[in-house]
Length: 115
Length: 114
Image (spheres, helix red, strand yellow):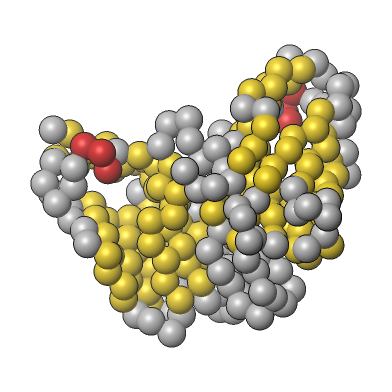
């Protein structure tokens, strides 16, 4: 158990809908990362937040957005869902002091199925 | 941006034998190289990592080597056991205040046959 929690574990929805994925980082970690894992694209970085502010951005679609709240939990919002958005979505957390890399601990993931 | 290639994509070994997975990266600024193990239905779990100021690191049956000149790093698992069966991912990232995004290789599915 990494200490990172994600809810829900599974999500089934229809095309065009909007969903919210939630992540709670490990105690003491200030940074949260979102990754997408699909069969054809592998594990891809989406976005990083550090202490409430966006820190780094990957190939995140405009239909996707994220935020980190004052209690450090994070939410990933996916809208206008398409079949191709079906994937595993992982949240990771780290201390990230801003000066060097540090270990990222991954949560168990949310499996999103878009029908 | 960074690009990480990982080989082989599948690896089948007999229990007790060694397994080697190799990765190459493109960005010379990368200086942190973690390896993750992912079991079915679970999130990636860090098993070992190495930073660019070190050429080799070992933790029991697992070792990682890094060649910065050639831009490649490898994972070595000795005395493999059935519980080593999983998908292994290498990753790379340059450190700095700009962020800490990991770029992953495509993964290696390892099967250890009893």
